[in-house]
Length: 399
Image (tube, rainbow, N blue to C red; front, side, top):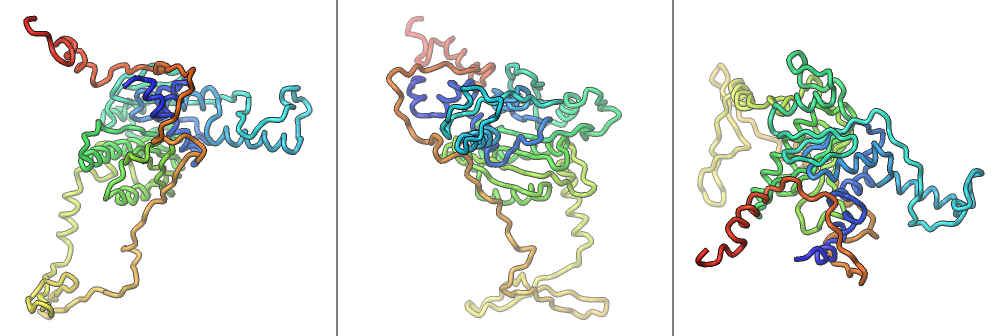
């Protein structure tokens, strides 16, 4: 399948090359920013699983170069449109600025770079350099990555004398990482949840109170448990689906706002979520101090058999008197039984391209090469072996 066919089939793939983005995933971050204003008052960011660098490229152009995309660009466009509609033109405006514009015309605003910007990108794959971006080639699931990240954020960090907490925490942690899918949805969802678990633990080590966390997830049957776990650390948790993300895909993005760690909590990759490998011992200690209960046999009026009724337990005190405790079976819901479901938000303008649709290309369309070809793709070795064997069909007979 040629490039022109993919340009027709995937509008965002074509737009990414035309607008200079390394990958189409840049539009996902931009559309998330349109909805949640992720870049407001943000100067320190950590980008996890960053290769090939499209999200880092967005951060570089927005924070370092001062370009405006997403919500900021929309607000400037709306403000400039209202000014021309009301004939409110600045006194120092040029003749070109006095001309009426359409609502869809992008504003030519002056670049406003932000001060003291620090952006660190991490991935197992090498990332081609980006202006102002610190790139680390490391595994986010390994505890040794935390000192490397803290050293990149703070050059004065000493791992021998300081703990695994950032002295200069960051405002935003983003992760667009996903495993190589196998097609087995349950397995893919599990591996993705473990990758998200590692990204969250790393984010808890460097995120400042009030910070934001954005990561890719695969929606499955038990995804509500993930939302409830994230709700412990963040005030607001949303599930977002950008318009540039294909509707046929199970991917979505979890957007966590206002980081509020529990009192006394200290994050560490050696002790994930403050518990780590101590969970079995904690459960054993809790069961050791719990009262001993025994199930009660109750007769089933339909079958006549004696069944174990979990709602009733009997306990004997020091005098040998047994008491039967019956749980409250009222239909009124209890606070502990309420199921919390994260809000689902669709991001992106309805007038934008549909990622699942095919569009007719103009007659003079020229298919462009990718902005940044893969530096070390995982299939590179397989291609070399196939070429050495004579191609896809092997070497001809007798050679």
